[in-house]
Amino acid sequence: SVGFKLILLRNPNLIIVSREKNFMGFLTSSKKQPTTKQALSANHLVGQLSIHDQAAHLASDPDIQAENESKCPFAHGRSSPSSSPLSPDSTPVDKIFDHSKANCKRYPYRFVPLSMTGSTHTANQATKQLIDEVGGVDALLSMTGGFYRKAFQDPHIDQFIASHQDPHAVRFANWVAEKFGAGKAWSQEKATRSREPRPVGGGHAIAVVDRSTAHAAAWYSAKRNPRDIGQHFKLDDSRTWMRLHFWALKEAGLHIISPSFADYYVRFISRFVTVYEREAPAFAREAWRWSDNPKNLEEYLSNGRRMPDVQGVSVGKALKQLPEEEAHDTMWPYYSKMPAGYNPSYHY
Image (cartoon, rainbow, N blue to C red; front, side):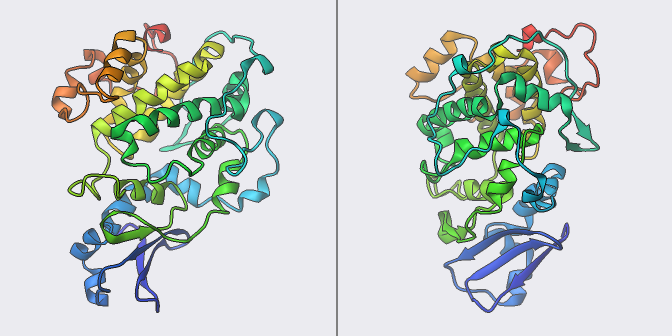
């Protein structure tokens, strides 16, 4: 059971799913409370927010484990001035980073290998430098804020987002900064989140306290078609998300300031999207190129912000949309050095 244990408390409507050492999230159900025997059965767990399958799917990922097993986040001190923490309560989601107020030197491209320790992404001085080059966490917020403005208008992605009032963009920017070694603002804010369960679809409720529970809540979003509630992210979800996100990165101009950041970031996102859809990494480079073509953007808008070339397309057909070298590239994004013939201007 991948280290999980189900604890039934005196409150008949409360179930806590936890690891041996770490709290992972609350789940409640308005349905009739099962017996202990029923609650421990695999079939019942699938019906009750699919705890065994869904929590294990996310929480067993090495990067998520590292996030949840870190020590007290307040012990790490203040972040550097270029990556000052963003307050979810005070920073508007539509804040636009003003590059005129930053060091807008355009940095020459250099290949930075994806920083991995085993199967976990780890920050180092090179990744921290990439954040400094683009302008720190405020610059990241221009990207994440732009992304969420697009996501809120995209009917496919917005179905996973319960509320537009939550500080999505700030949390995303802080998470990226922390993963690159620029402060601990995301962990600090995560430690302060409410443990109060929120209602989701299917008569369930979940306390959104970390990435695992946030994505479980998205799967069970009440905005989804009832027949889809509880389904995991699929390839078309991941491709749509990456296309919008990389489009927002370009609109923020981060790729112009630091093409090295853009190159690394696409590989970084492809690494993290794996836990949500295992076929998705192969499509990261295509997702980046998509917004380079004005015709793609025009068609997207004229189609009511939908992507018929992606949504509902099978994995087999989707792979045929990719260049042969990308569809079957088993080394990318984990190159330890820039391979011969690697052309970042083509990919990024």
